[in-house]
Length: 230
Image (cartoon, rainbow, N blue to C red):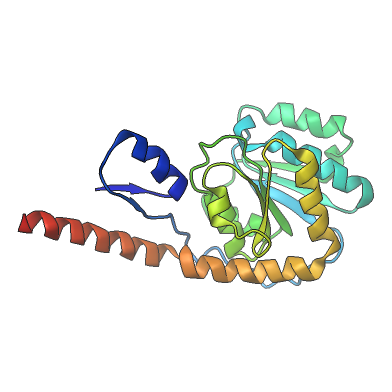
């Protein structure tokens, strides 16, 4: 039995085997990743991500896109949660774009604090640049918290986001398109709120880790039973 967390990974795996591949997506703990009840903001919006600080996650594109938004919305902020080998480079980029004073790099945070940081954000971005992004757990965690997401069209990211309903999918390595998606969310708070609600429901229906774990357990049992009968 071969399991894959996404359809795109299943297609890639299928190149190396003729066995059946079952798609068993990751889930998130909905008792932890949930809205904190704070009222939706209409100004002073916080953009953010939770990722390792590496080029493959498009952090530079996020910083550049946010800088474009900040030009018109000077009360906006950028929150980057995570650490990595290119942190100093990204801090320098933010400084060169004149947004260092409104950009926070938290460094590594304990996993149990991640929901708190996501709930500080109004718009969540995963602008990854490589297909190695096989699923998109960070995007699912953000949707579970009721935060609309903007992701790039790589790997399994487009599978977890419903375009125009829970967020937007944009071309990779394209800060202009990323900023354009941000702008739509900034200028349309009602759309932002609706996407947040849709995201919560989408995750409950498809990415509850209890349901997904039970589904995988059932798959294991079916496979074992077939083996015993053969």
